[in-house]
Image (cartoon, rainbow, N blue to C red; front, side, top):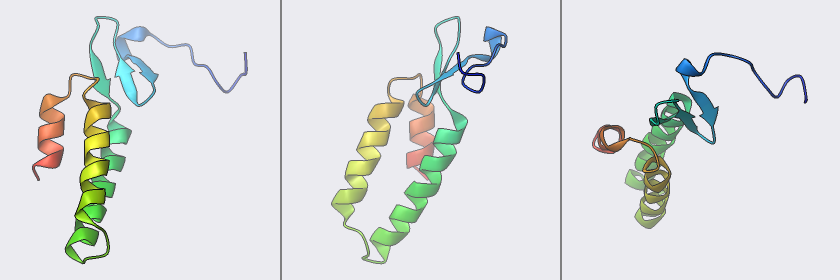
Length: 85
């Protein structure tokens, strides 16, 4: 195995995989860095829509894509809090 591409650590902190953190008890959460990155992009895209630099349909498409990704985790409250600001 490549020395920089694996980490040995306890599983109680979860395993980072494909934008999610998977826990041993079956819980799946969206990685916090993914949420911060989307939130920053979302605010920027909303500003661009308000300034008429981006089409509202493009914003809708991107929000739906992120929502579909986040829906694979236990993230109802997270999606609600990020999108209702």
